[in-house]
Length: 71
Image 1 (cartoon, one colour):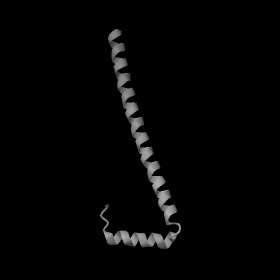
Image 2 (cartoon, helix red, strand yellow):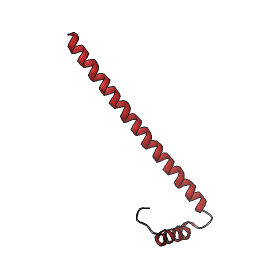
Image 3 (tube, one colour):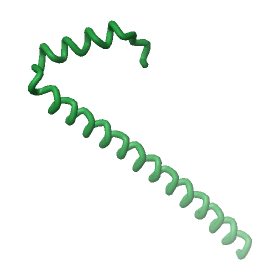
Image 4 (tube, helix red, strand yellow):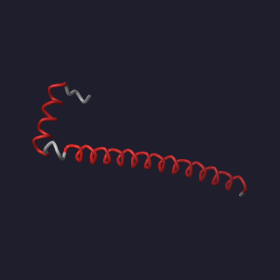
């Protein structure tokens, strides 16, 4: 996981507990989880918009080709 071993993860956990305290740790974890969910949702929404734009571009190209044939 990102090149971190067990010892590094334990050190990070201890530092987080020192900075935020054991009581705030669940709140920090919840906020981090919500942030990750929102980030993933935003990425998925952006991918959908890109796909929609590609489809529209293809449809516009087809319409232009048909107009040229008719003219």
